[in-house]
Every structure is written in C-alpha cells, then in structure tokens.
Image (cartoon, rainbow, N blue to C red; front, side, top):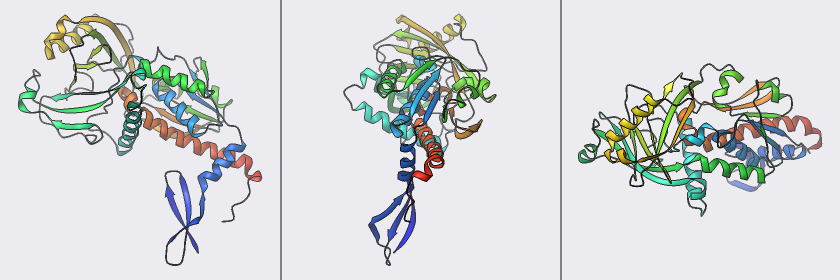
Length: 384
C-alpha cells in the first residue's frame, strides 16, 4: 500500500491507495488536524487592528476557526463611527479590473450573505436583496462577476432611454448590507465569544507585536502611517440621504473617463435612499461641502426628477481607503507574524467576508507554525 499527497481545502492529506490505485478509507493523515492539535496545546494571543467591517469580520472568522485563541480587537473608532457605517452597502465590485483572487473573495462573500439572507434575522442586520441598473454612455464589455450576481441582462433600448445621457446598461439583482446594522451585530457575536475590545489609537504595529503572538492588520487608511504604505490614499465621498420610498431600484451611472463612484448614484436602503457620486482621490477633507452637495443633488434629480421633492434626512462624509490592489498577505514585524488585510477602497462590504476567510486561513497557519515549534515535544510522532 502506498500514500499519495492530496491537497484539500482543509490542508494536505496523504491518502492510502492499494496496488490498483483504489482509495483506502482507513489510512489518511491530515496535516492540518495535527496542527490543530499543536494549536490546542498552546493558547495563542491574537489581535485585530481595525474596527470596521473588514476588521470585525476578520476577527469573527479567526475566532470561529481558532476558538481557543485569546482575541482582542484594537481600534481608534468602532461603530457607529467607521467608514462602513456611512456606506450604502451595495455588493458590487469594480466593473472590469478584477483579479481571479478578488472574484473568489466576492463569491465567498456573496455565498455567505446569501445564507444569512435566508434567516429570520436578515433585516435586523441590514441585509436584503435589491435589483437595479448600471448605465453607460456607450456599449461596454460584460463584467467578469456577472454570473455571481443574479439575473444579469442587458437593458433594452427603451429602458436605456429612461436615463438622460446614457445609452447602454445592465440590469442585475444583488445583495445589500447596511453596516450601521451589521457592525453592531458582528460586535455582539464577538463579545458572546469572549473577544475583547480596546478603543485606542496606535502609532505603529510594533506597539502590539510585543504583546501578541499573531497580528491581523485591518487598519484601512491608517496603513499610510502605521506601515508607511504611500500607495493607500483617501477617496473622499459624500452622501445625502433622503426619504423617498417610491424609489425601488438602485441606479449606478458610470463616467468612464473618471474613477469609480464619481458620477451620480442612487441606492435605496431599508429606510432611506442614498444619493452620491463623489470619489475625490487624495482629498483628506472630512468636512461637509455645499458645492459637492449641490453636485450630488443635481445629478440625482436629473436621473430621477421625482427626487426633487424628497426630504433630506441625513448627510455623511467619509474617506475610503483606496489602494491599487487589496493587500492580503502574511508579513513579519519584529519577529511577529502579521496578516495584512487592507486597501479595499469603496469595496470593503463587497469583499469583506471573503477577505476575512482568507485572513483567517493565513492566521491559522501562522498559529500552527508557532504552536508546532512550541509543543512538538508533546505531540506523538506520526506513524507515517
């Protein structure tokens, strides 16, 4: 009988086969299971830096994958004062510049939220389905994620005529997730699992590396100062929220000569409608600008004139942590494993769960390595 390596989602497995290649079910050795034995013998102290949707979801994925870990979330701000709390929450990535890895993270997020959508508490966490339009001033290629969302189709000529200045578009159904409801729910789940929260601002990752075995870095825009990552830039956004219950579909317009989210968008939520259309790269101003409000308002009313009579119920300004590509990888700072998970731009909600799962996998491997070194003398050797 011989043993053949087989890579699975849970680890490297050696599967025994007889002389004719048939799989033998009683002889298999999963390295990950032995690593979990190592991990169970050594209590790991893990810290997540960042209290937004990426940070809290990463914390939950790590805690569920490694329940014995002592986990703390450290952040300068928590809900309701994070960037995600102000986001409209539509699950849709970049139009075309999407890597295969990002498509995987999107699929994992969409699958996870689809399961939550079928629960009785979906509305309590701000999760719902919504259909709507992406419109363009010319014919464009289909997006690579068209088979992940539901019901993707091209607009008819008559449909496209409804939107002044636009002649082409898509109609899709996707999921919506409002973080001002979702983040408190994640926070409560973490607290029920014994996760600790510390509200403080740190000046460098070195501050926490000396106190923890593994660091999960979900610091967003703060990567510029914590890591000197000058590739991270603010993408300033401004949103006007109105009471307009007659608006039933989202509308995302696209000006292909500018960055994403820099032309009018109208996104209905559970109770209010978000009007936006600004993504001002490199702008650190978190104050409210009347001229930008006018631009948003005029753009929305041009698309849907009935919005002119809508009552304004809220205003929000925030800075998206824009980076050319999401940074999701293992690093080492002062001999401490650091899992970076930041740079999601305006797509933190879109990718959050997939990235959190990936970060948890990397964190578990780091813990396995540390625990194996610490406890190898107390674990029986494999007979293989």
